[in-house]
Length: 263
Image 1 (spheres, rainbow, N blue to C red):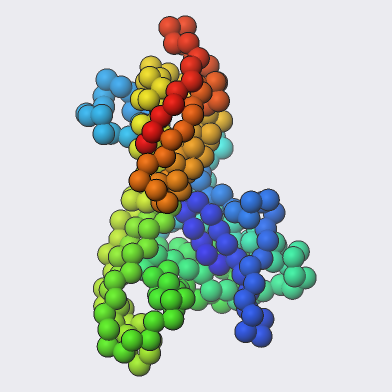
Image 2: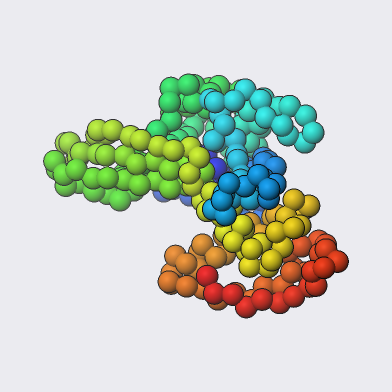
């Protein structure tokens, strides 16, 4: 199980052949986003670089917070994570007609023992009897099939919400970890918040950002992901934007408009 900040993937190995297992979501992702923090009022922003929006997920909170606000009430983080693991187990049973009691779950290499214990507790509550936690950076090195004996490698693991840097040395053909450092508040979602902030400034919609609905936020977040993907392949990206596509309502002094923008 790849337990991500914004998505989960699950697969299984049968006789040396590895296959991904489809889940109940058509795009193949299990969304883990649980809340958006309140936007910072304009008058309280210290500078224009302060993001208007921030996102958080279960993965960033597990082992740090006992409860989070969810659907109008306080819910235990471990219970939310357990529900996800339980759902993944059900998806496997439905798709391959076989139930699994054991699992390998990837976690950031910088996870503390408290975070790892919380992950184990959540997976056991979901019905797994044995769980092996595998560091994401170690998995990346194994996937790269690097066998250069004695060589030292640095592995960057930049996910949706957690950034980890690991140093490895290859000893007897296997990666041995020398050190890990991580930041659980730095990742793709941080970039999404900054890009949404930028788009709102381009639209000139600062006066309305606190009234945005979750529908608008999701549309803006999808746009931010589109922009990131585009900028992964080229130095700049041109987009045609229309306020009506992203904002439910526009104040009386702001007319709906089209904007051609290059980021």
